[in-house]
Image 1 (tube, rainbow, N blue to C red):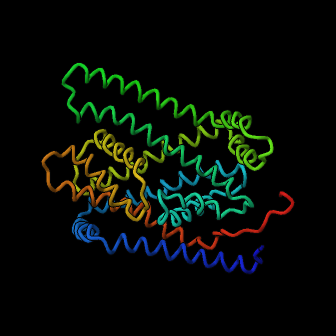
Image 2: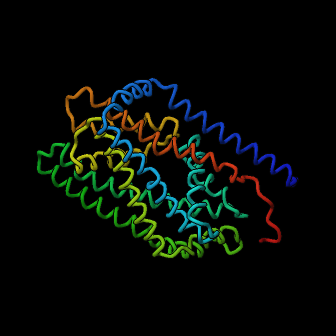
Image 3: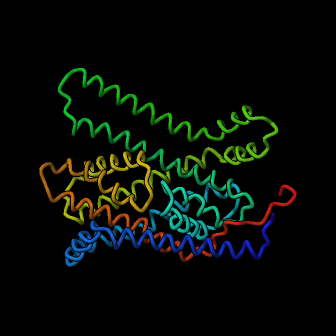
Length: 340
């Protein structure tokens, strides 16, 4: 039974309110009810008395809109293939997606949160292009992780026997091959999509329609998206490094980047929701970054403080800003008429 426009409008308002309440609840629970945050707040209040600390925190905050601004540009380039939108609207949609991502596994709600702010009759087309952008970021994380793992193994795992060095050489070759394959597969997505057409029954029009969306994306667009993903990776890794320095962890840039990349690399394999993401990310970061400070008992607290603050800067605050645009979220839509 088809719902009336009035009922759909009322349900959409109710769903927006639900998203807003869930986002507020998740942020409140993470920020105010965890024991780790109590320790973090005490540490933060003490360090805020130092001008150098305040300067580093300001820089990290300034990089937040740059981080998500790059993501908005990336998403705009992809979504323009099915709906022309302004950069400002793309940025607002990205923020709305962050709000919706907080309470979904592996932040999958971010895809739908963005797309449901558009005017598309078939939001799934937008979801496919949004996933394509997410895959570009995942590939970037894997590439940096693979490269960093080579330096990590050489520096933190003792290679004392000949067979270990041969194994290491094999890992180097494997990492390079995998990296090249990932990039090639991503850039050849339109060609691969065209081949998929031939494997699917001609009568399955809907599936062909979705494949055609991916096929329409030009290779130079995918290359730009991949380069933007690389730039964004450098930005949020830089934020992490700045916050580590802010909490008195003196570590050279290269060593820090290797260990930060290993943290993000391992995090991609761990299914989480944003609510517990800060705790898991903190544990992984402590495991890797503390290796540069063997025997130091106070390092873990500083690393956990840095990961907590970057969670607040890059997820909690953008999610709160995204709630300002929650009225653009339209989950229940008008039915498509005559196939249009």
